[in-house]
Length: 154
Image (cartoon, rainbow, N blue to C red; front, side, top):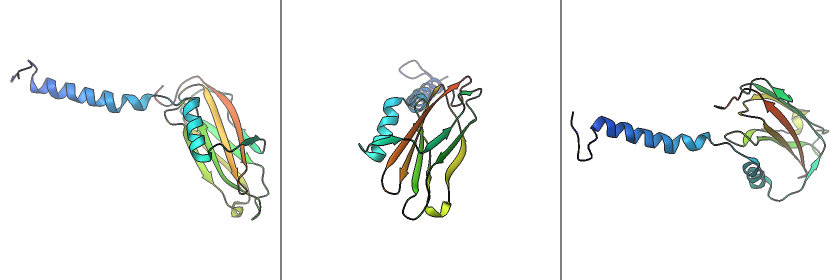
């Protein structure tokens, strides 16, 4: 075995460098978002605009037995006419590696502002939904989901 000046073999040095790289690259991605991260994402999208309650029906389970597959259904009350429609819907989670879960764009041609998906939730956390109307109004809804088995590496 060829040992350098430091006493490590070339193989040990490469292995140590690979571990250091993995610790620096992978480990930060395992960190979870928190309420501040979600607030920052929302502020990035909407600034300091006020949000009202109502109009959003956010349907998520109170308890998710498995965080790998958590159903999320959103429906926003709107006539969906050219003059009054839901422009976009954004779903966030404050305990996942990334705060943004999904965004949907709507037009009056959609006829109804509703969408369904499944998401992974790493731990018990809040799911936040924000609907942006065509006139610029914002509506929000929040639900807490208790996760018994995490889905994002947790």
